[in-house]
Amino acid sequence: MTLQVGQFNQLKVESINDSGAKLSEDVFLPKSAILQPIETGATLNVFVYQNKEQWIGSLEAPYAQVYEVAYLRVAEVNNFGIFLDWGLPKQLMLPYKESGGQMREGRRYMVFLYLDKATNRVVASANLPKFIKNRDIELKEHDQVNISVVDFNEVGTRVIINHKHWGIVYKNESFKKLRIGDTDIAYVKKIREDGKIDLSMQKIGFEAIGDAATQIMALLEKNNGFLPLTDKTPPDVIYQRLKMSKKVFKKSIGGLYKRRIIDISKEGIRLV
Image (cartoon, rainbow, N blue to C red; front, side, top):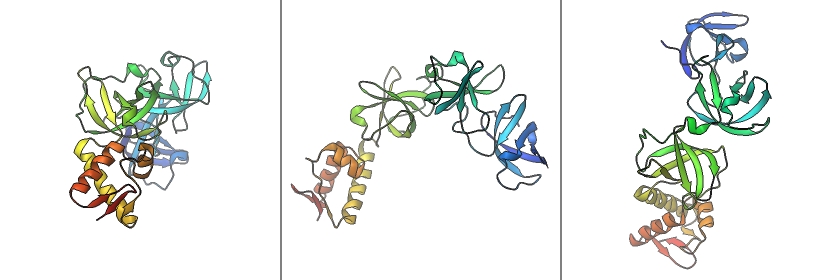
């Protein structure tokens, strides 16, 4: 097999001694990383990284693997580079040339993890546009995606989609408070001709309305058939109670009303 550095590998325990275990592919698993008894011949799921000239294994997952973004804390800055806490005993190096500016100890930054071709070590870069591109997009509208929040601008929240592409959640499509470094689920609303990707924090179209109607019905039944919510209720109150936009709420209760499942009054909505 080919060892996948910076990722998890299925490796066999070849021998065990007082300092740790020797695994297949010449990987060493330190004693401190062995959290439960292991036996010779067992196959383990091991994260592999390099420490000096040796392959080191970990049974614990770091905060991110290669080809992923993560919001990591600067643990130390010295003459050799910037070192990040990524959840493993050996800190993750970010070379000065990849910093994009001053980085201070104790602060967190969004970085991309990759393999340095010269050393085959896992390193990080704060130069996100170098790695995050809106090309070769294998997404379609309504797809569910994972997002990492990068920053905010006048139109909305800029995010990284699936560790690969840039996306934007416009202010009218974000119904929850997001912070830099947050990870969440979003849905592709539109992919523009220039490759820009618009996102929504809730499902799109009929899918959203179907889910929302089911949620409203469940909450009505839980609250003795009545909710003090109407089409005049402020959007933030609706989101706080139902985790959906006012637009989706209005369409959902409209559909339920037409099907004669609920009545709508000035006080709220009630099961028929």
